[in-house]
Image (tube, rainbow, N blue to C red; front, top):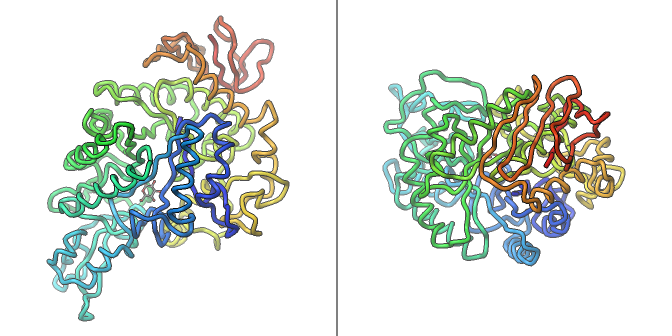
Length: 512
Ligand code: GLC
């Protein structure tokens, strides 16, 4: 089981209101207690933080904001003594605009080797003042920004699929490939156990950068026919990456792959490409049994032909938290608790986003002046973006910032009514969400009934689903409005108390 740490929001050790690696190290005991096997730490490399660290100015150094290299080495060493693996988040598709390469490209001439590391093009129209194609940026506005040439004249345009501070690299340039290989080795030599690879379906661009047929201005969406992503050349890039990773037999690579088609998704996890790829189907599925069943079947079908391990994720730092996605309030929480039992009953690798184990909801009423996601500015203040799922973790006490930081204010404010959701409030409470997670993770690790790489669907009442693992575990989800009887067997765990032996609505149970 992987646990995703969004370091800005996890724990602050130096009192500046922003989480850091020292904070992660201080909380390793908690993660061990929870039963985590491996950490995925969102980007901590040197960055001006235009996109929370996904804009990297030096991929081989740790930002001072997170404690610098010393804090990183200390974290990796401390994690190792506890038997926890550490995976880093690398960002190969783009750099920060403050990366020395991009700064050099700005002062160099069109056609120069400096510009050839990025995707610079002349503009369209008689004076070149229209972007080279019609692509929008994922964060809103055009995907191209025009530069001023060193002589002061309006010049070429550069491509940025995300914010203008995140220029796309040109992966057809061998220097770009070599540099990324150097980054992989740099961190593997320092003792990390692998990588989450950002926008792993990006990097390769279609020849000639053709216009998009239909241009949606909707932000943060994914569509298989989008020419900006999932181009055939990406697979050679993954093969190159895998060759380096294979020099370190313990290491794992996990790609962020927003691709719906099962066959095309599976291509990313062929034996010589990524080890694992995030499958976002569960994170996008509403709380109905049919939709869940479909998502599970498809996630399994996508990886089966290539013999890869399925992955499961209910949320991350880019999507609405599941409690809110399932309707919020008591029902949203009950459904999220049910879904963690479904997720942990499935064969494969599970990714848990920090705070999910506390049942945190999204915070959709953050004051406008604290919003930091580039989506907020780029949408002209019409879309709030992803800050609502990035609010810091409440650790203890009865008032914000709940032990997250020693200073008065955390970088995003924590709602005062989260006191009951804090780690301290939940840890000793048997019925709490964190206790449910702990117990479920422990059972999954210890019980032989979780064996076997498949599931078999069971008959179940309308609006419900039930499946069995070859080892003997049966998982039942009641997404209907009425209590249901459970199949025969010994009850191992339920996400809500049974009522006269029946599983209530919005609940799941494990039986053996
Ligand atoms: C990925 C990250 C997201 C980031 C984007 C650009 O989708 O998960 O947080 O904004 O890439 O790097």
